[in-house]
Image (tube, rainbow, N blue to C red; front, side):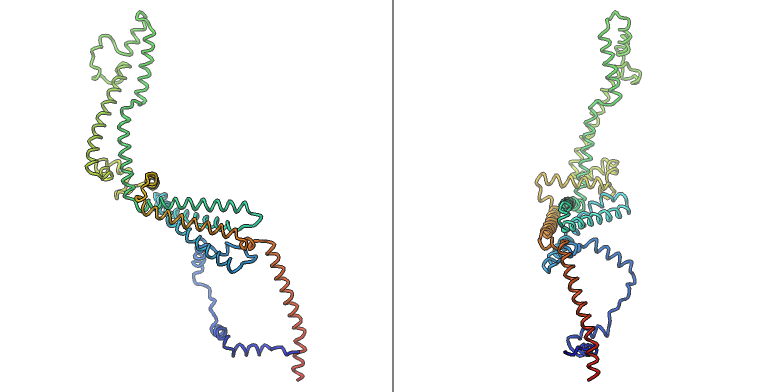
Length: 406
């Protein structure tokens, strides 16, 4: 029977063999295992890393993983990470302007909301890969969620970029909109729809209808007439000098109609003069600040930016919509470029994830029968090694006795 090598022989071989030089160096200078001084910071960084960077191992199971599958999962995870981070940064301005009126808490809510969206995006994308025969419907929902959130973020990247880079243009749009509303308000002055006028007009019409139903010989006819128009002796009276509440009912209607028309004409004349100044200045924001300071202070900051974040977001959406509907591709510029980048990165990330999930080897990596077969094989190998170890243990004492005898 051949002589079994002893432990001393193994140690001597490690000390002398050149191929174990690295092992000997590690033994002389063992790596330090000191606990990081700032463990809480490391925990935070690791949590942030898990949140931001997609884990390649989450894109396949553990039953059987080929080298090619592991490589493809790594590439897919990298694509998903790049897509999610790109959308994270392009969506940030949109969320920031939505919460900016809240000050510091707005920044916190913006960051928290964006991180939650990032996590949701990564989680739904990862869920697409977890395909087994028991969760096909669940995977389809994951695919729908992943596509939906990526489409929404791509649209948001367009609006967010417009909001971030076109503040002056949005302010001009808001100024023009505010001026147009003032013009429309002037036009509404000629519409006699005030409650006071409508009430008096109703009383006048009802009185006239009642008067027409009475004969002039009827004692009530004269009293109704006086209530509506005044006495016969007052027919030449200058009603303009009399307070409104002392006028007969139908005379009040005439007064209110005349005053409304005069107010409309005056406002229209003033607005016409302002329109001339507006066309001469050629800048709606500057015009609003100079000629309508109260309206300017209501909607804009001293620096000329839209005061309300929600209103700024609305103007950005209107700006993008108008340019797209009018075919003003050149006017879109950089926002359109960012939209296309988001669509490309998000689209390829979703496509690569779905393609990987439907690969046969990827599905086998989640297979329970394959896992069970693997476990049986490993258990068989473990029992074989244990049997060999027991055999060597039985042989070793006899070998030692033979060595001592010699």
